[in-house]
Structures are given as structure tokens and as C-alpha cells.
Image 1 (cartoon, rainbow, N blue to C red):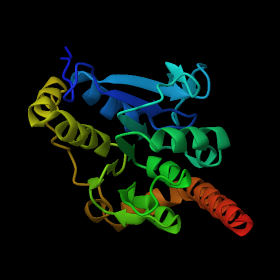
Image 2: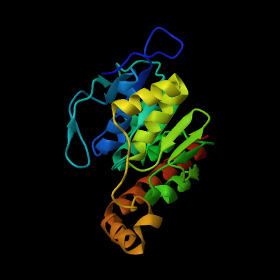
Image 3: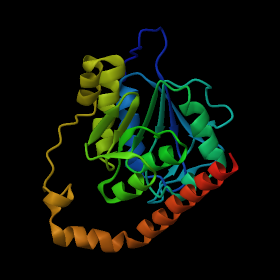
Length: 241
């Protein structure tokens, strides 16, 4: 059902989607579906070709490794999820820093922005993230956006999880044009009418937010520790320079 659309060239845009154990499936499946409908060529990138497992146990098989991923990507993308290990994985961070230096667009959804920040790819940029992790992103020196989709020059980021679909369509509109984005949206029949107004802390109300915070307390502590480790590593590098 996809249609090959190019960005002023005879080739489809190449997208590198970094996958890691603990990613949130919808963070990348939403954009992946949109990109595919728009005719982009998507590479699922990981350290090896062994399956990686999402935060809810869904196995995804990568299509390329860090070593054989195309050197020049049009779009580099990082999903969110349980990102602590990815933030501290030296091989993953080196890969992202390398491809991010030459990619036309550096992008993320949800807490994927924290991984980009750990790789130094959001220094001096504004970015969105999941509402519950904005303070962590700010600790990494990033200007935090509360937009569902944030655009700062060639950095595109989506908020939490479902924002990935809006993010994907926004990227398509900016790279291939509004008609391509509308084609992808129609193909996905993306016409959301949520049954509840509970997709934000303001809509959900204090009781639901408090219950969420209680459930998320453990992961939040792990993420806080990972951010502290990243900051310690930066300080150590700065002291040697």
C-alpha cells in the first residue's frame, strides 16, 4: 500500500531507527508505519541482529547492525522506553553520535530524547519528551518543550508514546510534502477520537496522576541514576580537557 516518494532525488529517504532492549514498541511502530506508507526505506538498527525485546516483551528483529548501517542517514530516530542501559551503552552512544553528526534530521519520540541527549545530540536544542520525564531531560541541559511535536531546526521530537504518529506525519510533511503526509495518514486511517480526556496530567486529574507516579517510581529512580551517571561521565571528560 506504500507509495515511493522521494525527497528531490531518485531514491527513497533512508531512516535509521535505533532499537534496544526495553524500548516501547509503539514509540517506533507509529513512525515506522507512517514512514513506510510514505515510501521511506527504514533500517532497524541494533548492536547485533539478535532480536531485541520491548518493555512489554515484544521481540523485534533488527535489519542492520551498527557496523553495516548506512553511513549517511536522512533521518536518525530513537524511540523511548526503559532507556537507562542505552544511555550508558558506549557502543550505542558512539553509533548515535557518529550518524547524528551527518544525518539530515535527528529525531526521537518519548524518552528517546534522553538517549539523544546522552549522545550530545541535543546540546543547544529544544526537545519534547514524555511528560513524566521532562525534569530528567532538563538535567541534561536540554531546553524542554511541552509540545506534542517539537521542531528545532533539524531536531524533531515527539512527546510520549502515541505522539509518535503525529511526529511521523510531521516529519513526512517537512521532508516529502503535505500530500505525502496526508497519504500516509489516510493509509493508517489515523482519525483519533479517544474515549477519555486522560492523555495528559491536566485531563487525567490528580488521582490518576498520583497512581501513575506510584507505579513509575521504580523506573523513575533508575532513570534518575542513569542521568547522574551521564553527567558524571561528562564532568570526568571535561576535567581531562
